[in-house]
Length: 400
Image (tube, rainbow, N blue to C red; front, side):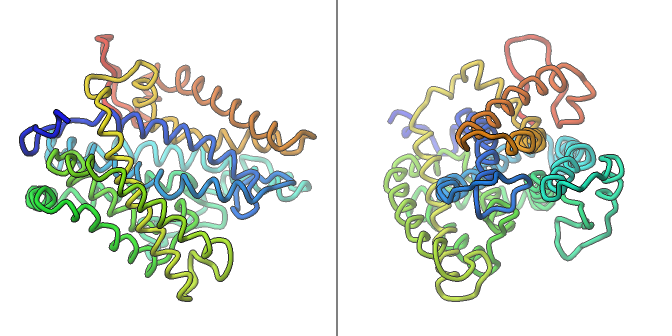
């Protein structure tokens, strides 16, 4: 490819294809969380009376790569932001762009799914929402569960766990940015000379998942495994010296990822709890899952980078979604749970219920974003968006 002849370090601008991928993953979460309504294994807020194990199998194909990819893309964005602002301004900017929607979403949006969970589990439960809201916000410190430092009987950050971890990673990174950037240059040179080093994160992720355990509340990965994806995005994902061998190895790494993921099937289907058990089979399952996840992410990065169409710009619909990614993420789960609560009690086939939940959720999310978030300065601030630009044909850069 012609791009392979670029000088070292070239091409370190924003990767438009990854902005698109991030937006599509966020939209895909509507389909994913709607499917959990019909899964027998997940403790989702609202459950249909009939479930199917097929949902669990299909969900695994997304869990292995989707959230890791979001953290990697966020790491790449953090690299560009830090380069422009410096460590101190970067930390302040992330506190504003991530901290404000985290607080707003936790206080205003996260109580609703928990209240609907109680109503769905017990038809006799009739506590007014505002009363429950006060109990939801009754919290106490829990520093041992860092960075989730608050707990309560009903309190949770819910789907905003992603924002909690992302903000923590950014603040942990900022003081060491200069040192890490120098290390990244040496690492990129090493990868250019020895492309096999692209696979070096795989055993690290396998060890983290195996030894620290997988956490169902955080999309099946250990929370600190996400730090490795974030760090890779920050350090290497935008460097052309790394992108060249990634493009070349994408297919082979993808095949390895599929094989490793297939190897987890016995552990997830039978035997001890693969998330936390310390049996050899459970440890092997977690290790294979971690290694498979790295291979899937690396393969997707390489395959997307072979398609240059987004280097010059992206179609308007995708540009719209890329800018909307964080608000849509913050809004999506309460909307899905609310529609699921209204649908599961109806008499209809599960496929019809699923289609209704997904369709109604997507339409509502677009309307909420377009009419309630995007057009107003206050709501843009609450949802982590930058101030609107004059109509110059260019969308503002994504907040993540």
